[in-house]
Image (tube, rainbow, N blue to C red; front, side, top):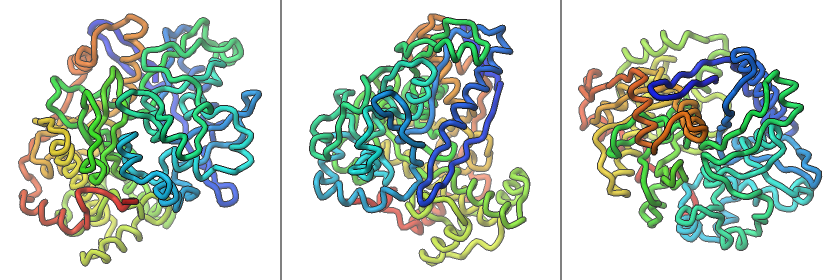
Length: 484
């Protein structure tokens, strides 16, 4: 994405898009990191062509928790393992035997997810690759290292490792020591707005950019950038950053680390400008994406707009599932797994593609409602509206159902919130814009049109109907099964 920012100006232009295809070798699911880096270089080449080779900065964000291991010479030891790989199966129980879940949460405030970095590192203990490693770089830090030759660990993404104390915004040596994890693997922490170096001469020559081009540290966890890109006015808002995952919660000045928060499976991920992203990770549109892939493989593919129209006409809340159920994490035959979950809870099995899609979207709206209600209850933060940003903005049925489920106005946009948040942090570091998060968000509000979905119950559903549907999900305080 090529961005322009300044007083009264905030624009994005897509200059290159490339696929992200995980690859299974043997029994292990990997990221094709070299293909992703090649896509980054192609994108920089396209940006150079559009700007006569001149860029004021580059910022990198990606998904969280995954990492690459480098040897003593700085070479990558192997393709990073995908967080959906099953190598961490059963590891959380092993960790809890050494460091009970309550103590781990009190120290790090991180939601239990079976693929958190801490579990990946414990799973890798004793492997030749980890034994040979001299450095571990989170995915955006790895890309930055290849571009600049300088290594660092960006703090918002580091907070997803479950090795950072959200109160000190630094590593937790106690957690690392008890789990036998060597924190010296990670290079020094750096914060959004810091400099990460300039493009290496080889990168300049390959992309056609004119140096020096600084790489600027942004909220490298894409959700951290997306929350910067929430066009909120004031602090009485909840957000849902939608895409493959739905990240639903509130923005706070300090973490919430009590036992009730842990049992509700809320996370305290670090945000830009000293904030805390107090949220729950929900399976998100992965459920729909996997359904579409399954139907396409069976020769039953349909255009998504037509499917959404048919789903809007389907009976509301006929069948719902727990969108945080770990049974949905792995890829493959999602419609069957959804149908099985409905049958396990005594609900009708979705019979058509439209019924399956309606089940997915009703379930996600319920999960959004539960996360917002739990965030308010546990944090004490009042909420008058919900902002939906990210790819889910393009799914108006999901946005409308979220408004109905929560009983709150839902403000939608921008779809590219992570890219806007990335751009805003870069622009501030470069001096093109000034101010705090409120000022950055005000620029976003004044330069972009937003849409509001009122909670009118257009589908005929009532608050009582949503309450009854929630009782069918088998959800305990909205939390997934996890070590106690």
